[in-house]
Image 1 (cartoon, rainbow, N blue to C red):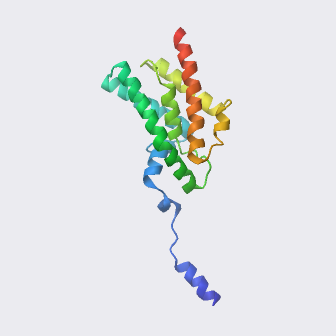
Image 2 (tube, one colour):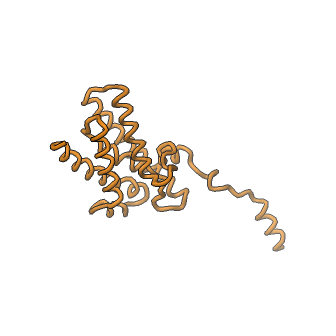
Length: 175
């Protein structure tokens, strides 16, 4: 009898983790693969977000108000779609906050870029400030990680982005 049960267990096909991935969630969560960059997937996600913003700004040449509202729309979409995508990716990878999930960095980086002049100097300031606040997680940024699943994954970076935005706005007074 035990041999029959063992044989039945081996006949049942087992799915590999890659087969169980929800494709849309991993595409969004990794920001279309940027989260697989090494080393520092969070930095790759932030750089990808900044370059996408720069490509739009330099390629389309929108009015400042149009750029601002387009960025707000991007932030809203990255949060609204990023929270469920991050939740699914975390669950399917059996990790609380997987490093390859970078949609949170995208939202935070775009927040840091709100009102930023379209030049490399200011863009790099926003990038460095966001990465600094994302890595150091000053209060209450770290506490936001305790929110459930994708909410905690995304909203700590939203808060880091707000810190970076505030400091970058102050620095623009002098630079």
